[in-house]
Amino acid sequence: MNTPGKARIPSGLVTFFLDSTSPPAGWAASTAAGRMLLATREANNVGVTGGEPITDQASPTHDHLFNTTTAVNEKPTDDVECKDNQGFGTGNDKVPLPSSGATAPAETGLPFCQFLCCEATSGEEDAAEDDFPPLSVAFFNRSTPPPGWSLCDAGFEGRFVLPLPSNAVGLPQGGTPWNPQAWPTHVHGISGTIDLGDLPCRGAAGDSHLAETGSANVTGATDANASPVVPYLTLLLCVKNPNASSRARVEFPFGLSVFFQGMEPPTGWTLAPGSAGRFLFALPAESNAPGAAFGGDPFSGAVEPVSHKHHNTTKVIVPVHLSDIPGGDSYHLGGAGSHTLPPTELAGIELPYAMLLHIQPEEA
Image (cartoon, rainbow, N blue to C red; front, side):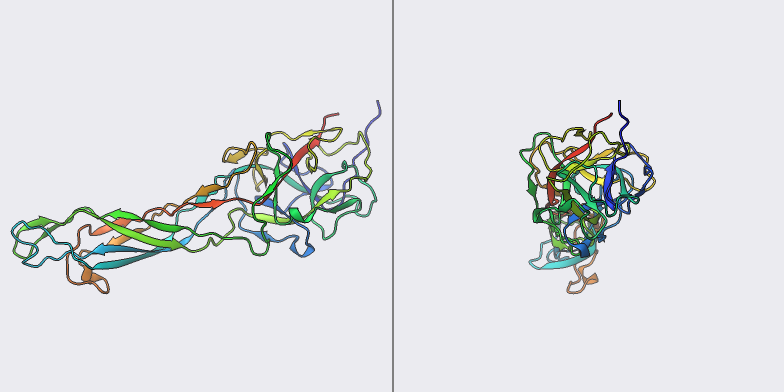
């Protein structure tokens, strides 16, 4: 049996290694650690990052600043309104109580997995040939494709590669592409009520009464998210030319994987395990869990947008006297104290994706 030769690897190729926590010889850990890889065809986008890297198996989160107004009723407590067990009346005027702060962080709900991401540092810079099969698709940390490779078509620009789910039809793309230098934002509305409860109070004539129970309407909105919903590193995405040559029975580094623009793996290659239907993160620094899956359930076919909302831990303070706030009269108010604001309304997230096979060499 012939001993296979070492595979020729183009310089600057960046890819995922399965079941590895350290780079093989001739490779270095990519600066993508804790980030997803975003595809570009533009040299000036290569190396552009967004957001902060995740830690081990931590779904990315984001939050928002917000402003709300809580509209409360005035509660008269004069002799006429509040004696002889008549209870407090409800005034016709609403007094706005403003609140602001930051929402609690929220996850996207999308499915992820993490693998070591490495860059070829001793590859064949100017070699006319390499040993990846034709129609292989890979990221490159360089400004132009290597010999025998071309830029992926324009449909891949600003998308994340999603390993093909088991029941997907074709190699679909979806979502609105990202501009790496101006990632998209979203906002949430805020609406709901808070229960003002009962406040023991003494009327002007000396009789004890409880303020009326009831609720107050809360309205508002968040600012746009100040960071992208997933952290990313932008790299050139290239496809090996369909008529390019490659050698059979060569030895690739252990655990190497690549993407493929076809519906079946090429000869000598097989599907990479554990990644189908999950977006790929580069293994975070200090992680010892390559291949770990986290986030939502993997997509089995078509990709559906996921929705999320943010809870609020900020409280609106309702003063005992409305005179304590601008525009209020000297009335007592039911529900004096602090009340947690309602959560935000739902907002959808759909990462821009391009589905491809995720493959690795078959064992010799």
